[in-house]
Length: 429
Image 1 (tube, helix red, strand yellow):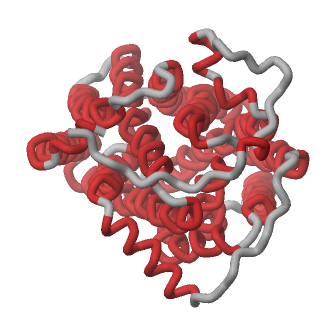
Image 2 (cartoon, one colour):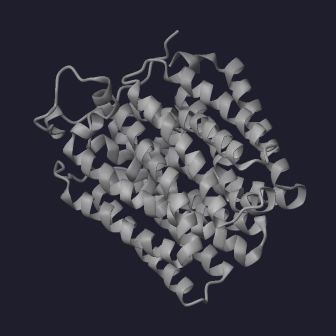
Image 3 (cartoon, helix red, strand yellow):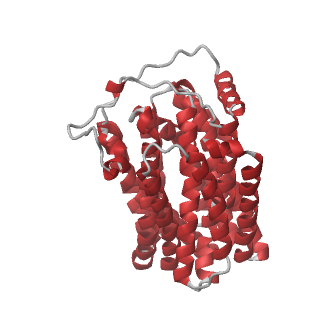
């Protein structure tokens, strides 16, 4: 049985200008990078790739700096919780804002705020006065900015590419994200060892210029303010009612919540894992994070190369079963090359869940609800990550890092098996 999904409204085809090189019979390579034939999306891709490289450098260096200052996995959880806590308070409202204002303008503001925060952290580090509470406070401020940026960023894709290439664009978004994940942490580990964490934070601040410039260079349809016949609360409820009324959307968002809380949050343990479990240093920390990113990049490229696939639900389930098994194996490994290999494999599974869930939700939502529905999606995605960071940091503090990873892997596997048997409709999407 094939589940029917609602079809979103789309702008006319001439809203997405093509280059002269567009071809009617694309090769497999051209299908893999189909969204790049749209000039606006190409600008977005280039700017985001540079910015995300800097973001991952900062995240990697920040985690290791916190561990150096505190020697406590619990504090790693505190930082993760602080960066994600604003999600619970503001992201749903951020989704309403993304439907009410120009998304390009909103992202220009949020990206500029993030740039300033990076430079503040760099200054504190260079002056040798940085304290754990500084990092926690700045992480919280970054979370506030991201609560408005993320829903707009998710919904903005539909303004750059038409519906038929939306899945490919989302896959390429993951490709650039995980390209940065594969390279940024390793670069951060080396830069940290050679120049200190301040250099990583400075590079991140400078990298935001790329995406801000890209946003300003885009040729988009003039933004027309939507009619505001309803209050913010009414519009918020409308978006939540849509999510609640769509069984496929509900189970996918539940899967995103589990993956965010039990898998993605494990990155908060990587600095402690690199030192305490593998006996490494800042470079080891970077290599571990890069391995997961490399696996996610491979998974995103694989999804993009499949074109307009009709079995996305089965791939979601494949990823949901695979990544907890590999994380369970990772918990027993003490040899760095094998640790990198298992993390890369887990990264492939995670991206199958996160990427394809995003694509299915985006292609099912009406355009007038897109910001609010993606606000709900982002609320879950980013909201469960800090809870997971707090959870896994506390478990690691009391039981140990390997035991925390094993427990999370078992819980994630149990959820995947439950969905497989209790919600077979997902496999037909």
